[in-house]
Image 1 (cartoon, rainbow, N blue to C red):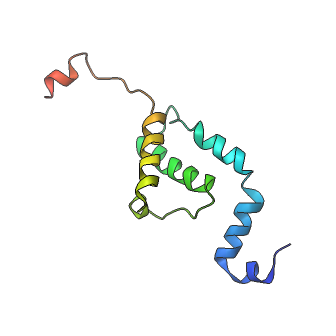
Image 2: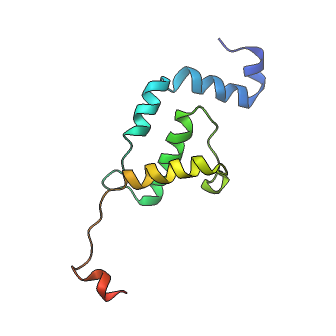
Length: 101
């Protein structure tokens, strides 16, 4: 049942939805801990999905843009999770780095 405040405030309503329908804290943290880039997912799509999962797991509102993440510790956490979750890519030719350096 929604309170009057949750009915009138978009922020309170979103908070209610997150708490009521987004899963337990443990399941959100486990999902974040195991997050990996999907086989056909671009790096950018994975990065955005990671940021969304990161903030959901901490019950913090999701920033509109990655540039809105100002806290340095959070930025380091996100970069670490991103690099850990990237799938290896295939190089074009075995001497790729030598040709392009």
